[in-house]
Amino acid sequence: MMLLVGLFATPAGSLVIAGEVVDATTLRGKVVCGYQGWFRCPGDAANLGWIHWSRDRKRITPATLTFEMWPEVSEYPAAGRFAAPGFTYPEGGQAELFSSDNAAVVLRHFQWMRDYGIDGAFLQRFLVGLPGGPGAIMYASNLRVLHHVASAAEQTGRVWAVSYDIARMPPDRIFEVLTNDWKKLVDDKTVAGARYLHQGGRPVVQIWGFYYDSPGNQMSAELANQLIAFFKKPGPYSAYLAGGGSWNWRQHPDPQWQAFYRRLDAYSPWNPGNYVKDKAGDKHANTRYWADDQRECNRRGMLWMPVIYPGFSWDNLTRKPAGTSTIERRGGRFLWEQFCELSKLDVDTVYVAMFDEVDEGTAIFKVTSAPPTEAHFVGYVGLPSDWYLRLVGEGTRLLRAKRPIPADIPIKPSGL
Image (cartoon, rainbow, N blue to C red; front, side):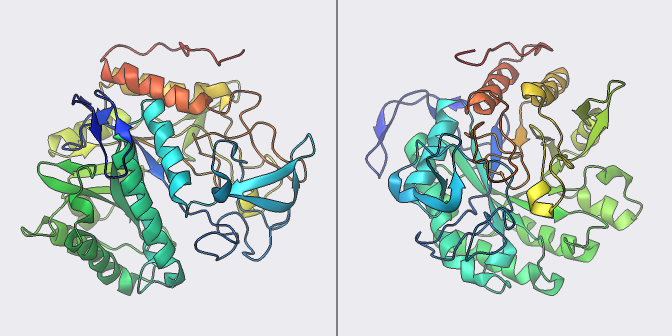
């Protein structure tokens, strides 16, 4: 949903043209991407090493890689790019990676969102990297990235919101660490910004972690109710709470879980990695439960915000043989099929997983199909680096137009 306004200057001095500013007063009608913003390189503002590029932050080698797709970095500023020792492009040039702890890099990402018609992003904010978390050394850097995101959203007319993630956080610290951070963001007016997403006059906040039988996400019904009560309590810290967790949430056998799920304002079932095979052996995202999810959320007055993804692979991250974990993108058809299903359900509020997630091979931003040859990487198989940005933009346009989305992708890769 676009808010038509006149030409105006942002605090940073850049101009946003009329018709390019996304309405931040409602989550409904938005297609937003999950945004990790967690990549770091030696010599960047954080100077913590190869964070999220390598399992050894002091060095990066084919044996230490934790990511699956090599980003296309030619459009990033020189100050945001860093040489990866030992990696070269097929033509022999030095291969580079980017740091998210750079305002110009984050701005470039939001410019891509604007240019391809994507409404904005949910910034992942992992509790482990906040004060009181085991990785609190990342806090200063993570806070800079948050401010870079807020500034980039202003400069590009996009929207953004905080998306907390409880993964790997000790359960006895989850409530205090999460709520203390939220209070700080409210008190310092961060979430009061014009580009921060609101719904019904309340700022939107998302929490990933409502998974059951998940050793890495120590959620309980008691903790969930405590968090929900905090955000629903009238007062300065009240928020519109969007939960994220198990895709098969309606099948949870515990009635306490069934009860708290339905207290959320919105719910996003995490679907990446959830697929079915056809007779030919091709993989397709599992969408069979979508209609029932939508009906249940509508019945309860909740917003159903489905998660779609372009494919998957985490061989390097999990040290599996090349190709073991891959869910093929099939030239974009895997993603496009999900847009088609959303069209049938008349859905226009969507969470795209993810914008920059090269660790698990779900990224939609610009990735090279000619990565370094020293290790295994998954590319876009000869397609342009912006192909998935174009697909998400086109799917967003058609969903918003309330027109049936054709089974065949209606656009062609540029230059092909």
